[in-house]
Amino acid sequence: MKSLPTESVRCGPLVALAMLLVASNAAARDEPRKATERPVFNQPGEITSVVDAFDDDNPFDLHITLGYQHSWRNAKILRETYIAQGSLSSGGITADTMNVAQYAGSTSRLNTRLDIGLYKDLALYLRMPIILHESSKLSSLDGSGDVQGVVLAGNPGEQLFRLPFDGPSRSGIEYLAVGLDVNFMNQWRDSTKPTWLFGVEGRFSLTEQRRACNPGGGLNQAGNQVDCADPSDVNRNGIAGDVKDGNLDLEGVGFGKRKPGVSRGTYGLEVHTMVSRRIKYVEPYGGFRALAELPMSNSDFGQADYKGSVVKHLPLEGWLTAGMMVVPWEDRERAQRLAFDARVEGSYRSEGLDYSELFDALGSSDAMSLRRPNYAAYRQGTQPSEIDTSSPRVYFTGITDVQAHAKLRVSGSATWQINEYAKFQIGLAYTYIQPHFITMDQPCNTNTNSTVGTAGPCRIASSTETGMHYASTGIPNPNYRPAINQVGRRFKVDDTNVVDLWFNGIVMF
Image (tube, rainbow, N blue to C red):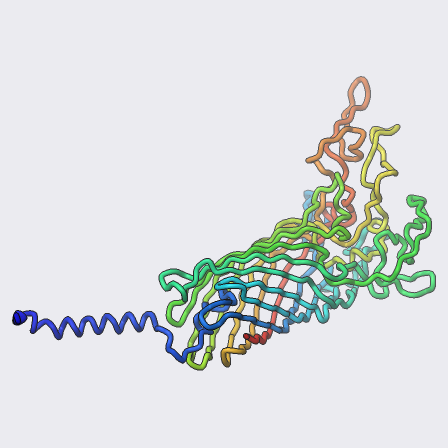
């Protein structure tokens, strides 16, 4: 038997010690799971976690979430004006700084969610937010209530609504969401990769859509208040039509009792994706999500779907998210963990038809400039163009063309997992919304081909030796209401702030 060289004998202990250190460092990095350790921590943080199934000795997972959320929303309502305002007193400049009202809204919501594991890193989930109570109020802003006949003027002699204005109380199911989440990558299955979640969600309105209401805003024939008048109830007396100036010739048609409603009356499709990476005690993450909506067939959004309508679509909204989860303490053997989450979200909401802070006040207005219908089309007549009285009548529902705007949201939450079956979460968020116009429709649709006969007021005239000649610039927009959409009379929201406080309890099977 050969003996080892003297150098090898001397170096052997050093090599063995080096190998031991490398092995111990690798073990410390990988932190292998103990035999008694719960599999619940073999998951990423809350933001990218997906309920599993058929995973090791855990063939089925089910998470049930029940939470309460309260939101407070405050904003200033301003309006454009030509009234002299210091340095803006000349030159035909339009200022958008006339104080109208202070808006204050409050919403309490029950958030329910069910996550069902379908396979490894694949889960189906259902969400159903339930609004327990929603209320809003418009009050005087820096003395605007004393001159509301000016700041809320419609056509001559009209006032669009009155201050203070108390909106209706709303409650019910906001929508039903059905979604699918999948982790394309999972750090806890392959430590060389981050965790990457992708999901898609469909939203469905189940209950009656929102209707513009003014509790105590009118009287019917029996002397009782008509809280939520039908858009075609021009005189707010419970009967369609009945305009004294003869513009309407509808026979009296009674309406059943309408409710304020709580849903948006839309179908929604949301896609979202998020990437996270756990590094010892912290887990930074980032991603985005986007939401698109389509109106339901019986929705008031359909009132805007005419050839002359400039804006027919609902807004598109997208969010960018960046944040970090910090885990200062966890006991894997007892399946206990304390985690803090801080994130920043920025969003952009495009121009589109939407509910606004003035939805109830304007939609329930008794001002004839808003209640009287517009006709959907013009036709060739004895004049170059005249109203086509056989075309549909377009009524104002309170839904308006809202300007594109951005939002910035910061939030923080804490999650305490007491064992492998239950955890609790509490959070707080603040959102700032960029100032934007909420009544900004255009008088003419210039993107539609038209003739002089169908152009109505959307034409230009020129005088020649042979007489007056006209050229079309588009077709009239039947949703245009000069009292609120004309430049110099548009409404705007400013200094909008939203505060959210929530608490969630989650049971895990």
